[in-house]
Image (tube, rainbow, N blue to C red; front, side, top):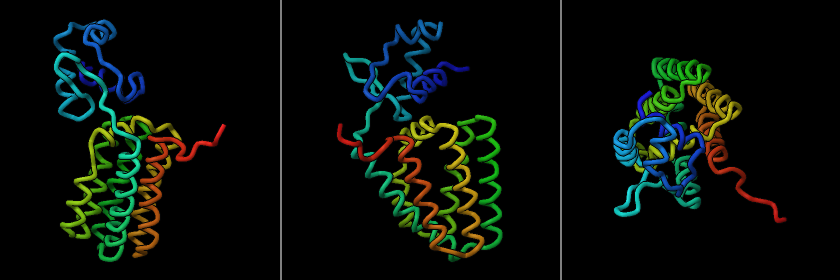
Length: 209
């Protein structure tokens, strides 16, 4: 496995939390490689948005304030919920079948534990659904909110139950679109994104001790 995949897995798997320092020497020893491929991996992960490299301070895991993440998911739920509503209103049988095939592929790869394929197919599903509506405004709005490192970290935080729930949401969204039911489609999309938010951020309101 390439070094970049190893380092990415350590971050997404929770070995390094947001804000943690990523020492080249420590990573090289942990992965039994030299510092050169580690340094290159960190640079590439910086381009992905998972790592921040600062002069004279080295690399650390990119940290997003909880409030910003809450806002991202809230806005995505509203906007992508509207996209699902529009899709259910105008989608053809061919549109629904294409989405269904992607949803089944997501389930197949999730069962195999192939998170990279799930991430890629999930993006395809959401982009295709927005494309059905044909709204450039919605597409642009969603694009500005979809941050790759946030999505990668979200999938990295999924346990088996959360992944199963996410997979089923895709299939149910297709069912709502086939039924031509905009309210159903919007409700499931919003639940889909709020479920992902819970997996990444945990309980929204902690009880007072």
